[in-house]
Amino acid sequence: MSSVTAEPRTEWLPHRALTRSDLETLPDDGHRYELIDGVLVLSPSPSMPHQAVLFELAVRLRNACPAELKVYVAPLDVTYADDTVLQPDVLVVDRPAAGS
Image (cartoon, rainbow, N blue to C red; front, side, top):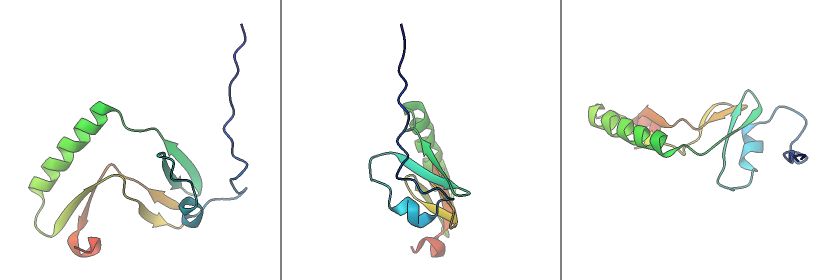
């Protein structure tokens, strides 16, 4: 018995390091795309136990945060550089930086 493995279709990817602009052109297909040093990373959806832990962590962080901080959960892009855009599971930021 033989098995067939499908190769991912990547012909639409440029043959260079990717940037935030490239990331913005990707289809909104429900996948979690991130860039790390220009390399496209596709992460699977989080499991139910992962989501349960994330929710509990976010609630505890929100309850412990001083007034000048705000807690966010994914999906939320955080741009570190033009070639590095991540979606952390949970993020705590200064309210002025968050615009609220």
